[in-house]
Image (tube, rainbow over all chains, first blue to last red; front, top):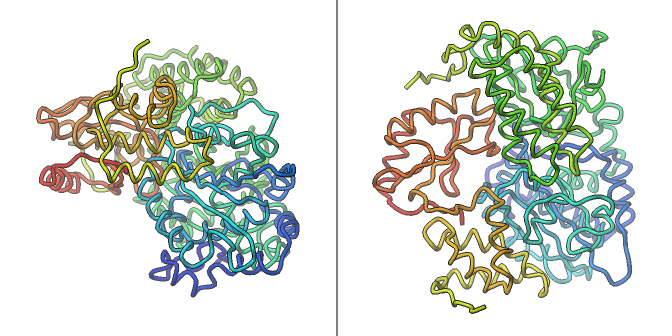
Length: 447
Length: 174
């Protein structure tokens, strides 16, 4: 069993309540931080820990924190990004639903480190039942003196609020999230200035993912070095992986970074292998945005080394033969899955979610969906494969925010690794068009 | 330009919630309350946002109606047209597709005898296909109001629809 830092008390009944959470070492990091540490010492420990943003970008958290401007007399804000919307990702939901106090504890400790006296948790609107869980937990924390004025008699004040989104993937992009929190459309801002200089209401702001903020708790409790000792190389600590698709045991797993991908897929500790005795065809390892890899490349790198669940190993080979850790949304597809049809669902998703500010993304995502629909309908020609490639290549790097890349990368990777399947859709659409080919349900039959 | 006063009014309970929501932001930043207030308004006024409802929200926040319209039309959870009492939001992205989301939609359409996007004749249900709801490990799934229905089977759907028909309330997130 790998070491668990976030979900170690997950199995304890009532861990969602303040009382039980507190009995299981809960809120210790708040006591330690507020009573014995200076804010800059906490930032230093987070730097030492090597923690990288768990939302998808993987940017070093300590460095992000150290960029925060601290002008005299100006409020600073910590905003938690709980807008989890990347297809394949449901770890933050799991954590907030099961152990809401871990996030609240992380918010208090992190807010203290950053000098914020008001903080927000921005939760995607569809997670309204989670919002209710968080609000209840926050109320408990206020009642116990961990939020509000003069926390634990230390003189530190913090108010913590939950803000619902309205249903928009783009609000997971930090400047779009800030716009949304200001009551506007979720249009990403042009950077610079970065939120660390001018974020929420123009004030210095740090935006961090739920899992990132939760990870601050063990880092403060045990020290940054202890955290950095877990994992492999620059991939320190643990990571929550959302596993879905055609596996025997879908769910959220906390792994020590560095677990071999093969072990993650086939061992009973994690995914438990592929459903119904089928073979694995492909994996999207880090949420819909990252390049899909065929079985041989997800299990082993191009050099024949075992591929590991780490930022470096998943990225090994660049986009030619590798992929990315992303958000840890691990989608496994069995041998009967149509990579083209799955790609179509991604393209439809990105077209729907493009905010429309930048032409390459607004128009490109629409065209990619339209052309992929032609493949599904058996109306595509071989030239359409090249057209798709051409369109995706004209989005990357030409937009304000990374949604453009997120839409382009999966298209490029699918063509790169599964071109014959696109050709099959053109040359022999009937063979692929059997509806049963798509819908093998667990016990479900065609209605 | 003449201003028409909206004829609608939040319930006392909802007004209390509005008051609490406004306390979450600095006094001069009350526009931040727009998204939560729109959710509340949608729940209070029949499951959708009419121009009158949006004007009312604008008047509470002392902002221009256009500032409300442009936000309401951006986010997918706000309905700008009336919908069935129970809006069944079926996730159709990747993992849900792989686990049979299209079958779920087809089954619902057949059972309710209605096309996706249209309310049933009695106004009770409406099917809507939506993008990833963060329930990939428990696919296929749909959301109705603030409730997630996961690992769906046709039998489960039958039971859910029967229960909702008996309950006969508007689905709401808030």
